Length: 145
Image: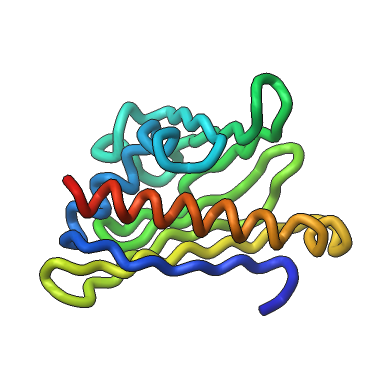
């Protein structure tokens, strides 16, 4: 996989529509995304769509990085793509849900980040660990609901 691409999949023991509902409740991502607080121009996923702005601050206290995104593709309940347009993080992000059975959904997370290759090489292992942990936490949370 190229250094600027990040890809993780997790299995969620819940129907696709329920997974989507939890996934696009942007503010609730603060509950499962490691060290991240999320805000959105939509109050919940039902009011999201193309043009919705999402801001995710990852860090501790005032020390961290702000990721600014805008939804550019919206295909409920299976696919959402964002454009990362912030000062520090630029690129694309995608969420895709795939029904594997009535009660099981695969969640595919993908990012392509535009940044210096050396910086990406240094940060990529930590990013993958944090995101995998967060997506597994999401899967456990949704499976219990």
